Length: 283
Length: 228
Image (cartoon, rainbow over all chains, first blue to last red; front, side, top):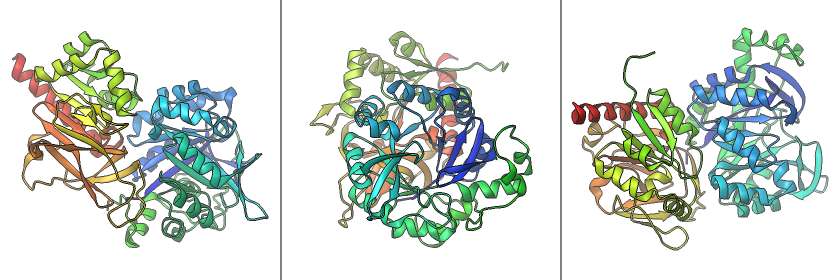
């Protein structure tokens, strides 16, 4: 299979943000600009995650989705704060192709089934945000890893598949934003226990990490944020002048987080291709 | 305002899935697309698209309930350009093995079967296939040059999402082939005025948009030939 490289964009209000362990958000710029750039550079899909699930400010998310869908002809998944079938209908109408569910699905697993019946399984991505416990178990968290659920990540992955999820996106909260690499154990165990595709998310800082998770970790696809954002932001000074709100100190400083190398989509794909890992790499 | 006439395309709405991206791709290439379940609008359009995601049986049930089966068949019989996408390809076939056996529109002879759970090498096969895969011309002839793939190179990447695939009875109906983990299957058909794809050209980047552009030209050429 051709492994997908999915650009993930975390959104807060009108801004693209990036945090560590899904916290400490830094403003990066305007999401649509990053999205168009990744599209032109060969991203296989885009994933927009409304990280504050800001129910009071859905208008900016709506505008971002619509503006993106007008320019970008690859699949766009949207998640964060989707609670009901009506919420899903709405973001699909704005131009999303798929939705990602986490909190709502854990609170009410039947929504997976209802959504799969209403929109087709392939439209429903279930997001699992897992934290490794001291006893070695992986438990699911919701609300951007703020809420403990006590649900076992491996059991939940299988249940989500049974209920009709079309694919799973697995976030290791421990690794997210650190640059230390994906959680191989978590990804492998889930990917081998389900028949649907598994997207690995959280942790890449070097090109080798993608190879590792696609081979040893048995992931079908990868999602990447920091490495791409740092690269684009470094090249485009203008994006740094964009924001009127949020913490822009970091991005204006021109620094990157120590363990995270900058990379373009094409760098990742070339690396995979050079290592005989199939992907959509166009020279 | 462009003085050029916009051709009307009916995107057939049978309450199965998301029509936004198909609609958007049509508008992007200058077509006047309308999402509709109205039989008169469909039959009066210059071209029609049958999209769709979801289960084969549910889709046929909805087409039946909305009384859209005969307008689709009449539209195809009229000779005007007709495009099927994803489930809209599968529905054109005689029958599907999804949930027992479901009858299809039988506009292209053949059946629809599910991907196996393992590859021939005994490896777990991830289903649905979600992602980019090659389409290629298996016949080694120039039949793409007479189709809306005339500007597409063989082995071009397209975006797929599906668990079932079609098996045309008549090899001549096959336009493109694709190989998923060793399973070689038909990913596009062309039969008279029908062109249909398993992949989503509207989600396949600039290469996919090219296909819509060529389909738009096909509509224009058809109109010229038939209306003077």
